[in-house]
Length: 68
Image (tube, rainbow, N blue to C red; front, side, top):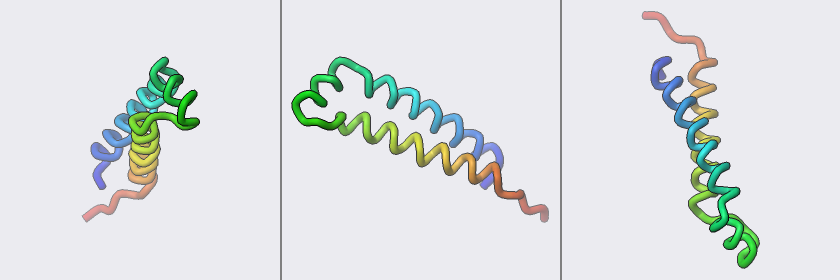
């Protein structure tokens, strides 16, 4: 994985986590949590996707690049 892709994944993951956090505290999500006891599917997917993308970006940056 190249550094550019790793950085893009890291930035994209942080953005997804930000929007997932915003969605988690939205009024519509509060109503959904009141009736169902869990956040909306959109919120769950944003947070899960953010975690996966952030971890993939961090792992890609942590791995040493192979020189040919």
